[in-house]
Length: 155
Image 1 (cartoon, helix red, strand yellow):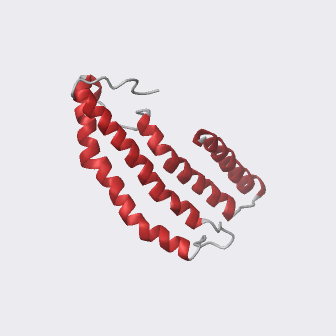
Image 2: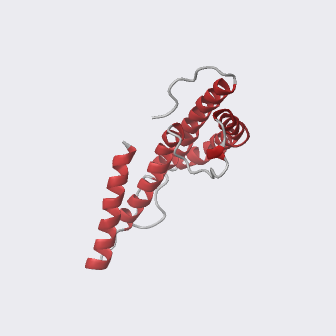
Image 3: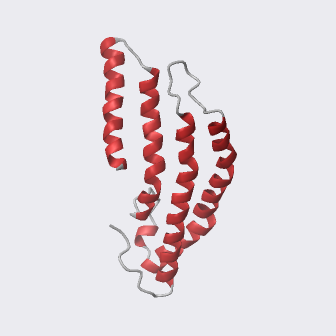
């Protein structure tokens, strides 16, 4: 689903460029749509990207580690970094999103989109989905460290 949004994102960005440089016409709403789509793709795709192990990582050392060492790195990273960050995002986004919904926040630009509050709603959804995936990855890492069968890992 998110992959199709990326196709739409590219087409819309091409349209922005064509209209601006080909016809000297710009649309704030169209430009904001491109930005919103980029944010939507990121926030909806983050947990899936973690699930299929496609997040960017510095794997100069990681790649050469044994599966148990990789599981340990993943578990420590989840406990020390990913889970606390997700919880922090949930905690800090609550009032932020609530305020946006209270005032039905819209673009500050004239002619911009009137759905900023909907976009902001994706922030806690990102945190929840990423937290769920982080917990699943942590469980998988613990099973791997204790020599239990973890089943099919990715793909």
